[in-house]
Image (cartoon, rainbow, N blue to C red; front, side, top):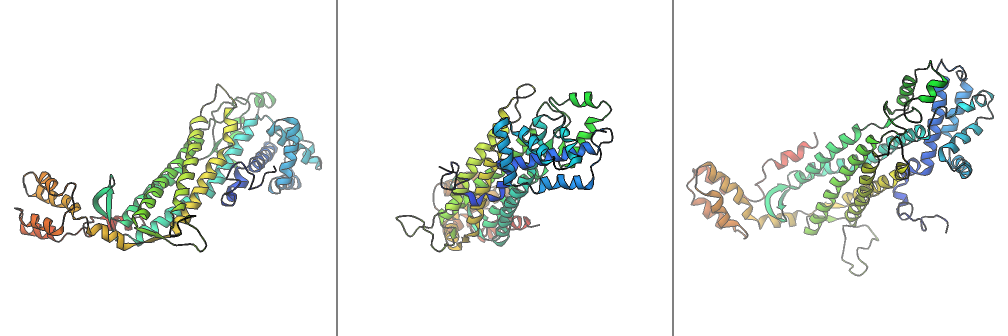
Length: 456
C-alpha cells in the first residue's frame, strides 16, 4: 500500500492529518532535513566571516545570495534528492553534506571551498542545532493554541464571574463558588505553566566530536573556536552550551517536554471537570447541523471534544514523559539511543496539537445552563453549616462543629430547620441576622472578585 491518509499507520498522518498540518514542515523528516541544510549553510558562512581562516575568504554578495536561496527555496524535491543520496551513504547527515557540495558546483567561488562544508563537525553539531530550531519553531505554533484556550477560559471566567454554583469536594455538595471562579483557577494555572514553557531556551553546541574542538584547534591553532562557536550558535537564535560531550545533553529538551506535559495535564483536569459539568446539566453544547451523537440514541449530544482532548493529551504525555526521562541519559560521550527517540518529538507534540484543537472546538460549543445550577444550590442548604459553625466559634458557643455535624452530616437540610437552629443560638442579634440572610447562592465569599481578577 502507498502511504495516504487512509493507509497511514499513525492517525496523525491519517484520520487527523488536517488538524496537525501546521506542525508538518517543522517536525517531519522534511523539516529536519531542511534545518540541517540551514545549519550547514550558516556554518559555512560563519567560517567565511572569520578572518583567521584564510582558505575561506569572505563571500561575495552573489555567493551569499546563492547560499541563502538554497535554504529559502528548499522544498520536497530537494529533500528527496538528499534521501536519494542517503540511500547510498546510509548516513543522513553525510547525505546533506554531499547534497550541498553538489549544489555549490555551479558557483566557482563556493565550489573552491566546498570541502569546508561540514568542516570540523560531527553529525551531532548539525543535528542538535536542527532540533533546537525545530523546538523553537514548533513552540511558536503550539503556544498560540495554549494561549487561545487560556484566553477563552478567561473570557468565560469574566462572563460568569457572578454565576453561583455548588462546589463538589469528593463528589459531595460543598461550599458554594461561582462558575467563573472555577474557570479562573484553570486560567491562572495555565498562565504559570505557559510562563515556564516560554522561558525555556533551546540550547545548542558546535564543538566537534566530543565537545573539545580537538580537530579545529589542530587545523587552525590561532582561531578562538569557543568564541566562534558562541557567535554562530547565538546567531541562530539559540542559547550556546559550552560544555557538552559529542551531544548537547538535552536537558533543555527534558525541561521543555515536562513543561508541555504539565500544560497538557492541567487541560486533562479541565476536560474531565467540564465533562462532569455537562453530565450534571450545568453546560449545554451547541449542536452542529448534521452531527450524530449516537448510532442508536438520536437524542444524544455527547461531549466528544472533551473526551478526544483527554485521550490525546494522554497519548502526548506518555511520549513526552519518555522523551524527558530518556534524552538526558547517554552512555559516556555518546550513544545512539537518543536519535530514534528524537524523531518522535513531532508525534508527541502532534498529539498535543490534536488535543488542543479538539478542546478549542469543545469550548466554542459550550452554553451555560443556569437553571440546573440553581436547582442544585436550592437543594443544598446544608452547605451553610460551615458558615454557621464558624460564627459560633467566634462567639464561644461550645462544640459548634459537633452541633452542626449532628444537624447536617449526610442528610438534606431544609431552610426552615437551619433558621430555627440559628435563632436558638446564644450569639449577638446582628450575627444571627447575618446568618439568617445567607442562602446557598449568596454564600460565595470572594469568588466573583477572584474570577474577575483573571482578566487584569
